[in-house]
Length: 260
Image (cartoon, rainbow, N blue to C red; front, side, top):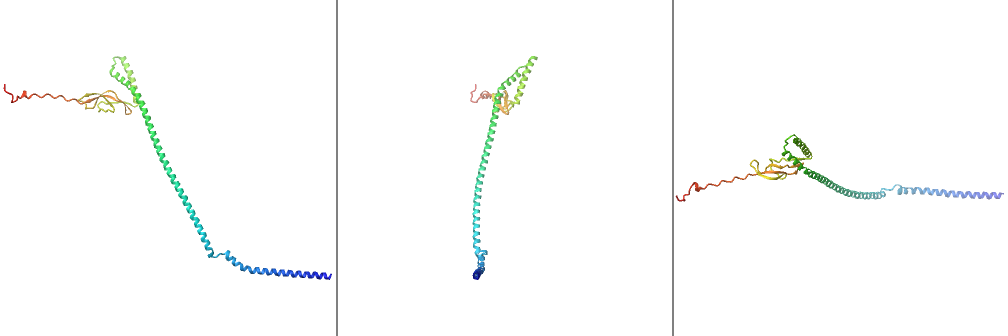
């Protein structure tokens, strides 16, 4: 029993000594790590945390150059886009001006076409009206001849005269409403635009070329000739024939004549 206790005590003493040795090793390691830490701290702060101005300047210049290069590239790109847009704008402006000019030409052509069509339409209407009214003028002439030549002798003839003269008046009023007007060329100079010379008569009362009488009445349709007036025109009178001169031999005998 005593021996076992002795052995156990010896073992425990040995374990204690080993723990002390291990604790001393740990303390020594901690001391070395603490000594090495202050030496490493300044170097790490100097190299990484607070770089020196000399070391930071190249990096700043490089960053500035990169930004400047990027800005230049961006400016060049924007300039190219602006030029492209200006070219497109100029092209669109040119096309717009061309479209405006084409529209103006089309509008002018259409206006000319409208005026030409309207004029042709008016000419066609005037031609149709002229041809229709020209067929009625002989009827008017017959009424005028009847009024000038027929002289009613009794009440019955007067009634007939008034009846057809009423028809004549209605016909003339209708022609006036359509724009027909009678010519009055007597005493005016002969104008082939409105007159047609049928006779020439010597006259001392009218100047040469003056209309003396209207044989067939002329008419105008809206200031345009519907039918020319057939007229008699004055001509200059011929000179009177000169009388033959008396013989000088009868009045005054010649000196060479021998005496009887």
